Image (cartoon, rainbow, N blue to C red; front, side):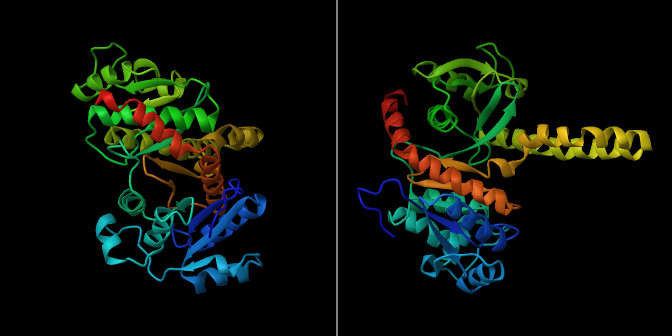
Amino acid sequence: MSNSDSDKTRCRIIVDAMGGDFAPYSAVVGAIQASTENSKIELYLVGKSEEILKIISSNNLSFNKENIINADEVIGMAEGPTASLKAKPNSSIVVGTKLVHEKKADAFVSAGNTGAVMAAATLIIGRIPGVGRPTIGQPMPNTTGISTLFDVGASVDSKPRHLLEYAIMGTIFTKEIYGIENPKVGVLSVGEEEAKGNEVTIAAAALIKKTNLNFVGNVEGRDILKGTVHVVVCDGFVGNIVLKFGESVLDFLKYKFKDYAKKSLINKLKIGLVKGSMKEILKDFDYQEYGGVPLLGVNGISIIGHGSSTPKAIKNMVFRAYEMYQKDLILKIENSIRQYSNLT
């Protein structure tokens, strides 16, 4: 598990085989699909080796058994994050994040207990110097392309300097991953006017205004789907509510379409005629397309996936980790955070 100076294109990715509602099947199948499609990904599976081998065998997958790292403990989806890390030191989450911390791997991918993954990444891998709080960003489709919301639940009760960090890290991520040269940044508030908002948002806006980021000021909830800005920053409490509401929209629309179709044969035929188009349009709302979300601010690549992740979602999580490695995102974030360290 080593990269030579002449082989920077290869990325060593650890996938938590025991993470998620459908583990180890989804994690193993999806991860191996990713490494098969991209030969530059050096894949390692961490978890209960016997269960991993069963999935590989029963699905006729080709994988180097030497790249299976045994971890015989599993942190359940409902377990307390910090306590579980101490109680289960040989869990797949702890073992995987330790390998990243020890520079024996370049990225850790997991669809397991979100709180435990965040805690392990923060406590074991450690934070980038100058980062007060890591953040999770969630892509949100809109009329102009995509916006990313930071923070969506990594922490609550953020201080103004934390929102500044989210804006800095979000700008780097959006520029490098989505190819937007000068991303627009906005602070989520209750009005566009500079004086609108609570103490945290007003103070955060004042800090961000002092940077050379492309800051447009306050934005409202409706601006997320309008695509007014590319990066929206807010406290994790607010962001998580927005995220959960947004996730419910797709299921609600599906329900409304089905309910409409049930009312008559004519309605059913109408829905049938546009079903393919609707499926294509609503694909942007499907979490499987982007797989998982990055935990920015930790000193290593950590991708967190949905608990119900399918093989497709896991595969795309691995691809996102590889892309972040190729773009050298950690170093770029560290340099940018250092640039604005005097503001706080």
